[in-house]
Image (tube, rainbow, N blue to C red; front, side, top):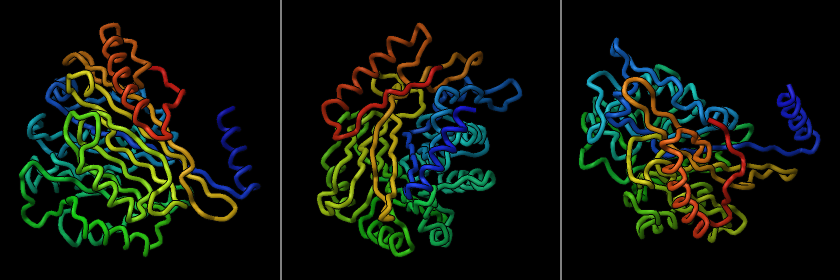
Length: 359
């Protein structure tokens, strides 16, 4: 009751004072390794992801718009982990139930099951009425899908999604994968602006795996996107966190830029200290009396995946400081120490939020 009252009061103030605000959250790679599939598989050969995301569901649900990188094809059996992923539809159901609004599909594993796997993923998402971006059943479908401009509490935001590659697997049978192609990106950004987008967010799969700092190609591509006037650049792929920046655009000083080089893993079964978790990025949008939308602030939370034991207990994701399983508190602390060391040294105006959810 108190939460409802506060929400209504804030909405009332927004109307009276003439401003609008919205909250966006982004998480990294949602993966399904074999141990995760084994733990989720039931005796009747269905899959249950009960409890998987309970530790962060409240955070995701309360955001006005939430984005996840779906780094696996999704379709019929056989369901497999690395190196050629294929997750069951129940995994998508669990992500949707957690509150994610947009599923990114342009990544290096999107063709693990070739064109059939790409299309099956799109079918699963479409059947559930879930928004997705980055891969398309054919060129006509891409033309119809883009520009994707989402109205988030009055803010008209264009989302775009690209990947550096697809592990050497070429698109077949007419399917389309949006690769990092500068003329294509420039055209997409211009079309989004022409179609009425007030803000442009590019979600991009790039970088060197397991490196905690961005490589030269990432920096060069980020500079290209910044010169286009992109407002948000949200990176994934390295499977570890990399720095975040919230600052003025050097080409358009009147604009703020939110740049995330890598959010790391959202959920996976990777085992090194830096790959056990990732970050959830949060950006707050603001529109004042002048009517112009701006990026007001940004912060992050550290997330950690606690493995399950097949088949008795599922994997689950929670905030890193909320891990209570005795055998995993030490490893969560080590992940957090190493991530904070990078963020504290290299982040620009992107602090860690002090709000933590309990497991």
